[in-house]
Every structure is written in structure tokens, then in C-alpha cells.
Image 1 (cartoon, rainbow, N blue to C red):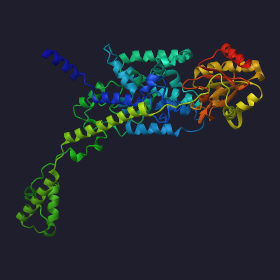
Image 2 (tube, rainbow, N blue to C red; image 1 turned 135 degrees about the vertical axis):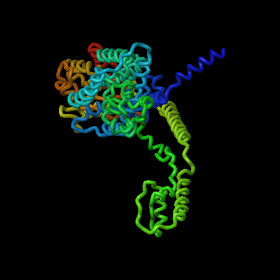
Image 3 (spheres, helix red, strand yellow; image 1 turned 180 degrees about the horizontal axis):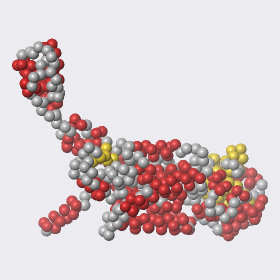
Image 4 (cartoon, rainbow, N blue to C red; image 1 turned 180 degrees about the vertical axis):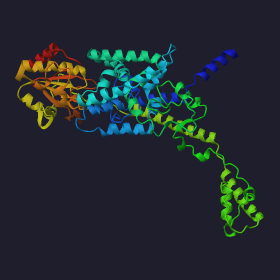
Length: 576
């Protein structure tokens, strides 16, 4: 029995997580503190919650659409900002990336990125492993090509967040599967198309490769790691190499699983595992002097006797003998004789030795216990971190209320304040025109059925179905007004997208439907709502709403529409 419990104890002892692993788990939990989102299947955002923190970026890669996420992914924010930047520079996103880079560099990859944690756990599965070699080192530069092409160039010139949309396995896992696996989101499933199939295939491939290759995504694909790599040399925190102590034995490089050429280069994730293998202790943590000063680690050496110095032939001037004795006692390198009449040797020795003894005692008084000092700092740091995590978990899951939006009910006549209030700016070919508004009141006054389609440029089902709405407008002409209302929460140059979006089967600039931009313009039951919120929109796009000529809200649907379903809903509204 004793051997059994001893075996169990040894197992736990051998499997205690390292400090780095604890920090990784802590960061993943902190980034995704909105635990109730996994239950409800709704993301934390300005649309669903009061006072969203999604305008802030977390350091590591963590998808905005993850149900638990309380912040934005800096890479996704960068793509969206560049996509909608037109001629403007996205100072906030670039600034936050520079700030993270200067402070931490790729320490973020090694300690704070949930994607890195998942990759390392996958690599622990016992299988044959592909070790790093000259080929993996060459392929490690692929992520820089991806950064330039898919994150920067294409979003700017083609207006598409290409990496997030077509590649990012983190978004597919956290956002896609995180939302689709929730039974409350079964209406999302019909909207899945070829892009999700492709991204799911990419996710599966990355998962499999991470089992055999250490941090496959991080080393060969991740553009965020490429960005932070530019700052690694200058970052305030991380690992550093003392070249004076380094013997260039190569143990650090051979021990590292990343494709580094030397400690602290752009491929180094600052995990610190090389510190323990360095035989000359040439590798240490940058920034450690912030907590431990040099004079706290060194014990002052004993000062040689002044007698030995004087016996070497040093003489001093009588009027300056005290100053000279201080110099001799403290700085043993002072050996240059000063031409002057000598004073009594005994007086000099007695006075200088007393001064030296006093100085040494002062230096040695209350010596610092370095181990105790570091232990106190560690306890304080972990305590503050624990309190922060507890506060965030309690705050986001118990004290942040969801928005209570009183949407318009299907089958009811629209209140006059809604009909009069729905006035939206129109895209007129050159951009938003604040002087040219779409008015629901005018459409109903002309006896038309109104079809509102809420869409977004990043929503593939939206893009796929919009030609159906134009087809309806062409067929029924003056009997219907069709308004494609773009989401107010998706940053994008919508006019450029309308004029030149790829994968177009017909020219959208010739569409007969009206393109408008959503805004908080509707006053209803004491609330100021966007049109999307007023007509039942929650988390998903597209949403279709139909109002008959009498102002009755006759139809609402979240998800993709075929032309036959759309026409049937329109005819029912027309004949009602």
C-alpha cells in the first residue's frame, strides 16, 4: 500500500505544471473569461452586452468570435483596420502591436498565446516527431510571406481580411466550432458553405501536423508571431545572451525546438528553456534588474589592510591624509605616491583602518537574502494575478448584463416612430451620402412593399444571396423597395467592395437595389436602436425583414435565402 501511494505521489510530482505552463493556462482563461458565452452560444460584443471590452486587443492570438473572448485578436483587428482604412492609417491597432512588441516581443508567443498552449499540448501526444533541420529553418520564413501578402497587401488593395477568412485555424476552432457546437445556434448550420469546409480542412491539417512538429502553426504560418519577431531584439522582457560568457558551444540552439540561429533572435519565443542548459550561465532573463538590483546579489569583498598599501611606499600630504586614507581604504587600486613629507605610519594606519572598517561594516550591514527577496516577489505577483483573474471571471459572468432589446414583433403594425425614424445614409457610387437618405416612410407612402436585407462584407452567405434581392427588384420594379443595409459593426470600405469585390457573378454597381449603412436611428420603447436590432437581429448575418404596404411587419428570417423563398415571402406581404 505504501508503495502504491508513493507511486501516485511520484506521478503527481513528475507532472506538476511548470510556471510557464501555469501562465499559459492563466492567459487563456483570462482572455476567455466570458464563460457564460459558451453556455448561451453568444459572443461578448457591443451588440449583445452593455459596455463591451472588445475594442481592446489582447496580446496573443484569440479569436474575436470565440464565445468566451473578452477582447479582440490583434491580428484580426489589424486586417479589419487595413481593409477599411482606405487612405487612413490605423494608428490604434498599429500602435498597440508596437507597444506589445517593445515590451514583450515573442515572449507573448511563449507565455501568453492560447494558440501556443494548444500546440504544445498536441505535441505531447506520444508519436514519432519531426525534428528541426535546415529545411524547417527555411520554411519558417513562410509566415513573413503570409504576413505581407494575406494580412497587409490584400486587405488594403482587395478589401478582404484574407488570413482570418481563409486560413486562420484559431478562428475556425474558437469562433467557428465554438459557436456551431452550441445547440442555441442551430440556425447557423444552413449558412455553412465551401469556405467553412476549406477552413475546417486547414484546421484538421494544422492539428495533425502539430502532433508531429513542435508548434507547427507558430513556426510556419502565424503572422502575429512574425510581427512580434521584429521586436525581439529590442523587447524589454525576454531572454538575453551575454556574449562575454558565451563559448559558442551550441547547446542552447540544439536544445531549442524552434528554428533559432541564436538565443533571442526573431524565431525565439523566449520560453527560457535554454537557460538551464547553458554551461557558462551566459543566458539570463532580460528585465530581471527591475526586481533585483546588482548590489543585492553581490557581497562586498574585504578591503586590504592600509598597512600593506603603505608598506609599498605610498606617502601622503599631512593636510590631506584623511581624504587620502579614504581613497586608499575604499579603492585598493590607488597606489600612486603623492610627493609630500610623510606622516607617522602608525597614525595613518590606525585612522585609515578605522575608516575602512566602518565602510565595510556599512556595506555589509543588513545583507540581502536574495532567495527570500525573490520568494516574496513571487508570492505577491501570483497573489495579484489570482485576484485579477477572480475579479474578471466574476465581473464578466455575473455583473455584465446583456442588452435587453425589445425587437419589433412579426405580424404587428410598425409604430409611427419606427416608420418615421428609419432614415439611413445611402451609398451612391462614390461613398456614403449624408444628404441622400433612404426613408421607410416615403416607401410606404408610395404603397410599396419594403424588403430589408441586413448584410456584411465579411459574410459569405450575405454576398451569395444578394443577387436574389436584385433579381426580385428587377422583376417587380416599383412594387417593391429592396434595401441592403450594411452592418454598422463591420469596419470596411463598403463602396469599394460594392464596386470591385472579387467572386462576383454580376456587377453590383449596376444593382437596382439600394445600398445603405445601418445606424442607431430608431427610437422604440425608450431605446435607441439600429435597424438591425429593431427588426430582430442578434448575432448572425444575414437577416431579412419584410414590411407590407400597410406598414405591417410580415416576415423575418435569419440565415441564407433562396430566390424562391424570398419571392414567396414577398408575394405574401404584397397580398396581405
